[in-house]
Amino acid sequence: MPDTSFPQTSSSPILVLNGPNLNMLGIRQPEVYGTETLEDVIELCRRAAAARGREIAHFQSNSEGDLIDRIHGARGTASGIVINPGGWTHTSVALRDALVIPEVPIVEVHISNVHAREEFRRHSYISPIADAVVAGMGSHGYVAAIEFLLTRTVTPR
Image 1 (tube, one colour):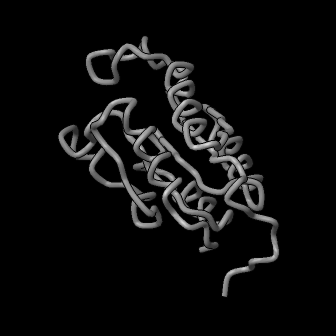
Image 2: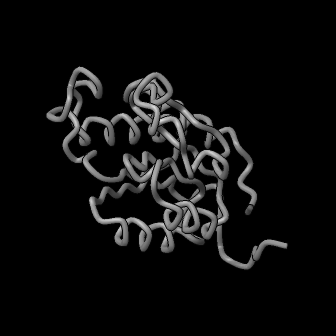
């Protein structure tokens, strides 16, 4: 039975996490990832949450350990997680294991359609534990993920 003793409420912010290289949005392969910057994406997320009277917190790191530490810190402080794990999607069991710790709904987001790209991108360690997966919608995928989380009843995993 999950530990429900932490003070999680639906008014807690949604945590938007971005993994490696996503700080280079708008510069790195714009033909694949578009021309919007990470700051543009975060602003879209803020507006989507604010339209429903909610807030987001956000974090990006090129360091796997830093991202895992931020996930650990989400326990009891976030109502859900939107995560674009970047390249760690396909490689990181440690990230997958960390994502179950906060016991909140999770949406995995990919700007590109990873299923139409290289074979190695078609496997995700995150998808099996995610409540939803959004791929190929560009930056709007983040908005779809936030809207999905805002319609969920927050129940610990």
